[in-house]
Amino acid sequence: VSGNNVYVIWQDNSTGNGDIYMRRSTDGGQVFQDILNLSNNTGSSQLPQVAVSGNNVYVVWQDNSRGKGDIYFRDSANNGDSFVKRRNLSNDSDISQLPHISVSGNNTQVIWIDHNGTNSSVFFKSGRLTQLGGLQKFTMGDANSPKVDAEDGKVFAVWESNLGHRKVIMFYP
Image 1 (tube, rainbow, N blue to C red):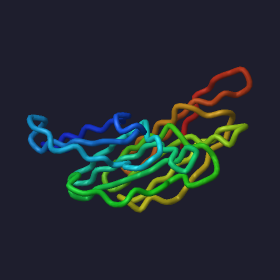
Image 2: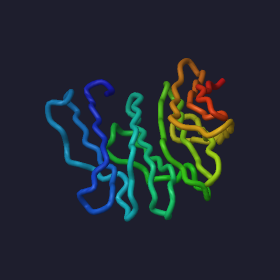
Image 3: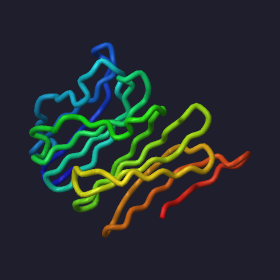
Image 4: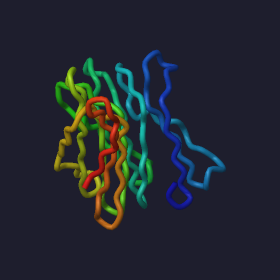
């Protein structure tokens, strides 16, 4: 929610493959506009996340269009009237999954897990509005359940790691 704009995002299998859809209301949820397919590809898209700041709407999801998991990102600078072309944030040979997104002011943060077949790592990108950069990698045991948030320019990330026979909660910074 941002002002009177309400955004609803979900995954749906009705086309035969998973797609990510969004509907927007500009009157506080009284009436919703037409459904928009944000992923619109032949792969299975799932686990969408949305974050909103002012007129900016950001969406991430995991997708297997290239034969494995990748993390995709789309954004809108006009309250969801239109979205820029989707971008592959992970774009590597590992299986990327479980994306989480947050926005604080002009800064967007996205975190996800990459599996290389043996271990998993946490990957993180942040930046001003849509200029996500600064890929960071955290490796310590097998990772799961990543979450990210920010406040006043400070970024905080948390995830679960399996260290031997123990599960621990990791925190960044």
